[in-house]
Image (cartoon, rainbow, N blue to C red; front, side, top):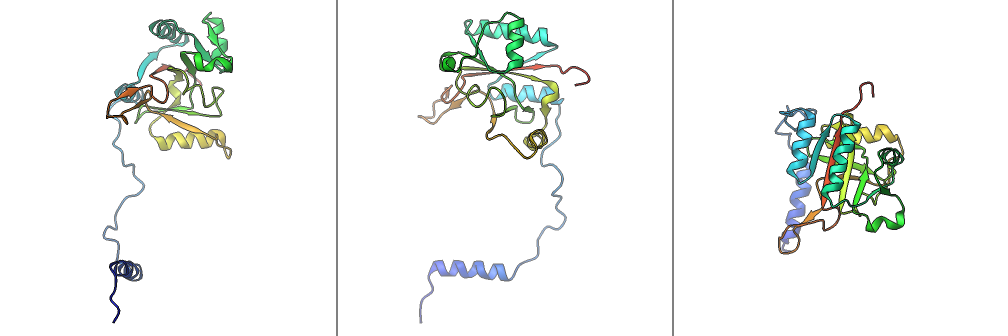
Length: 216
């Protein structure tokens, strides 16, 4: 008589379980309701709290002029390092405000501050979603030591799921080749469990949130 190995016993148990299916022990599970609790604060406050909790820096701006003043302070705070920018809207804004910037891709590796827009802001995790379809592309949120993101309050969504719904609506059937969720500045503790900032990306992350104009 052949002895049955432990492996065969396991497979036999699995086959029997698949043949003799037991009734589901829970029949009244609600799979439609959210697994998350409702926000205790407004969506703007929740995002700000979560972003700062993971090491990002947040500033609320009442209008464009307020945002420019806060941007100038960030530049000053970072030893007046030059800004690098690809986005035409931001380049025009910087030119109007006489803020020096660089846009030559050749110089990208040597520029200290990267200035970009974003796709949306995810309040629950304090994260920023960017994509390769933006003018800033894939590089500008990674190469500079300091990453500054400008967003408006109408770009806030509650959860990651809402962010992907927005992206599918915006880009229809042709999604960007790369969608990135940025959660705070780059950091790692892989080496001897010592926290190192800026290991694989920006050492500092700033978010300037501008109040959206009515009607937009």
